[in-house]
Length: 466
Ligand code: NAD
Image (tube, protein in one colour):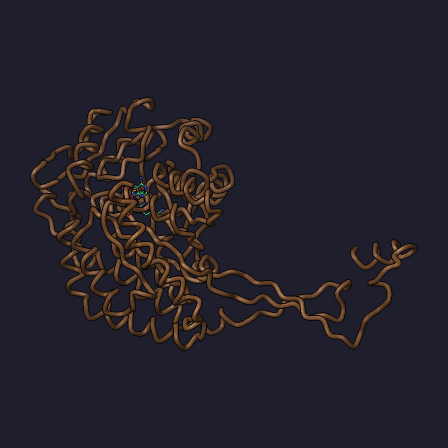
């Protein structure tokens, strides 16, 4: 037995069993109990706000405003959404009943799944762990939370908030090397759902492990999200919005435009406009700029700098390893077979690739199918529909980039390589509850047609079910 197996069997396993026991007490079933938890949770997040800001700054050099919009604010608005709607969403819903079941009535009851496991990455370390957690706890599940080990300052503050708000029998917060701990946990304990956000490579491993226990999964993965700029686009607005999104969090965003596909005739003017906005937003020296982040660690820094030779640097390209700094960088003349076009970039490097026809652009996109997002900049309604209809992708924007994920009325998630299922708002309520179907039949009406002998009744059955 190795060390991990030993720890698993002696510590984690008993902690996991306690979660199951607590869940089975039914304490989390009343909506009032869950609303109370949400209220406490919100209060403790607000109290720890400055610590969260500091931690995000230490881990990723995020500024306070960006941290609010992309991390704390999103989580608080998710809590608000649940506070407002939880009672209504949790009520059994009466639905239609077909003739053959007359005079029964039909209902969908919602119940929590049980013990769920939420695993998060490091790029939005607070939001990506806490957004699904809000729904998990609001729906009455017992939860295991696993933050990324690569954003340790944020992981520490989250641990404090969780321990302040919840009992360890309700929520178990675990830390450490995911590659060692997570597989052991999944192998040794039956979770009712695994909600994983992270890379496609690890997502496949999680899916495989979950399959051995027949545990359902939500996989929120990455991919290469294309950004198409047509010559009929409002170029200044396109450049401004692309630059703002792409270089936010130093490009370490799952829905960042990964590469630009631009109509050949406007490539140079688009590049000029993007350079203008890079300077406008992050100054001539982004290293010193309040709005510009850093790369998470040396491993990512080395991976990203090795991509810089994939094309001709049009702007940026400066790197400082000790500061984990890579300047906002634009490249052109990229070979489609280069490393840059084989993997998700996930950093502040933006390749620009010209195309002449839609078919040519589609062939490039098909090399990395099912991206998490797609962005189209155009003034043509017909063309926006063309791209939406012809490219399979998770979600996206027309004349914008990444903001779709901030609207909780839209389901957020990928497809194929970029993930399974989607969440946010009511979609998260769906993810963390089971829909239990109930048909309720009164006893006062009990027609003979429903019982044997059936001979001679076929014509009636055909009528009743058609
Ligand atoms: P990652 O897959 O390396 O790690 C994510 C989590 O998995 C961490 O908690 C880690 O401890 C754990 N983990 C790592 N290796 C493991 C293994 N072998 N077995 C089990 N667990 C393991 O991802 P990352 O580098 O932290 O994040 C970057 C990726 O996440 C990018 O691909 C990005 O696109 C994607 N992402 C997707 C979304 C989304 O919402 N779809 C959001 C953010 C990031």
